[in-house]
Image (cartoon, rainbow, N blue to C red; front, top):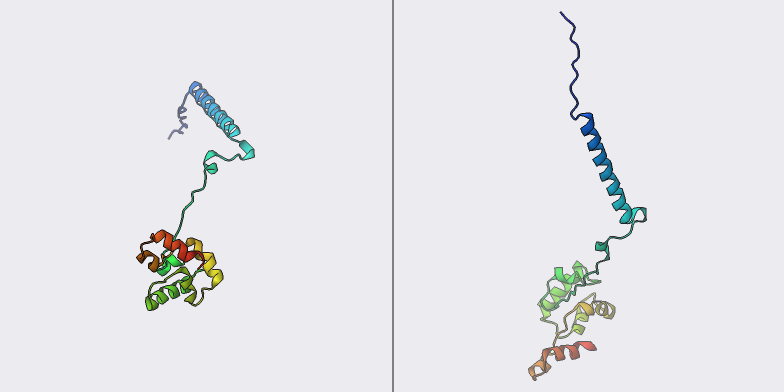
Length: 145
């Protein structure tokens, strides 16, 4: 039996094409490095998307209609206090004013002051019944409460 001579496979690209591919790869790499340097390089400059203005959302809760999952979003109100507010409302009826929340065990003046900016004002029923605007009545009723 004869010895088998190893056969060499022809290269995938001829030397001239290899040089072209190498040149294009090097040019692309240099272009990427130039772009990286232009965008801040090692300084780590902030890109435009990080400079966007933060969005502001207003979260207001109606204590006479909210369930405990909504109430626990308020600062200082946890699941237990949220459930107490709902239970008090179910037992005694709707709150007449925001000051009425202090009747709930666990809500004092400090807690009420902390959550007041997030509560929808409760209109004074007498003022509304007498023909005043509900917004005017709510503001008057809840300012000092």
